Length: 190
Image (tube, rainbow, N blue to C red; front, side):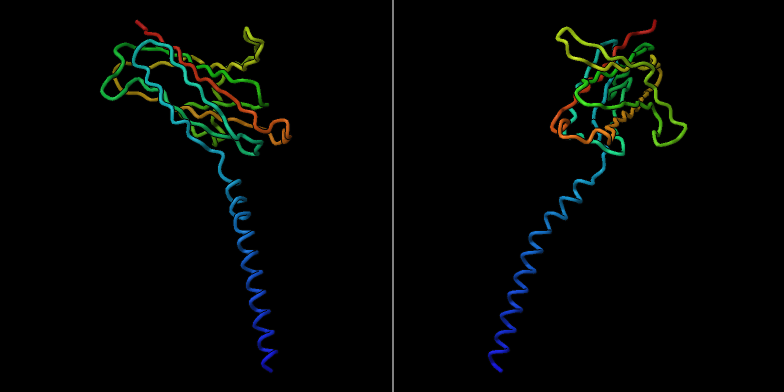
């Protein structure tokens, strides 16, 4: 009888040890699956303060972008004030976005709108692919001219949607980085 109890105790210890090993093995796998399903929304954290006629540029590097059924959404702002400083005349500015063509991405840009609404309007009015002097291809997207008055503080909030269609799931696109340059060219209106 004593041997039977010892035998059952040993089996319980072996089974407990196997269960512990399985829990230790599968916990990181389950956690990593949760992490990979995270949202594609990100914040650029860029604010352009257009308080004088000038040329502003900001380059964004897109890392770890993968084909997805949902768009990657990035937000940036353009303002006519910074702190207590505000522009002193009416001002117009042109916004253009220049992207490398390393990845087969599609772009949409929204101004002061909730892009998820059906009535939201993509404000990219033209886009062209052209080569520079080095022979590298770039996609240039242009919007209509915008304006700011000088009498009150104003901010325009832009949402840039980047689509990486799921039809491009392939190892050839692994680890490729996309670069986007946001350019604001502003001038005074007298």
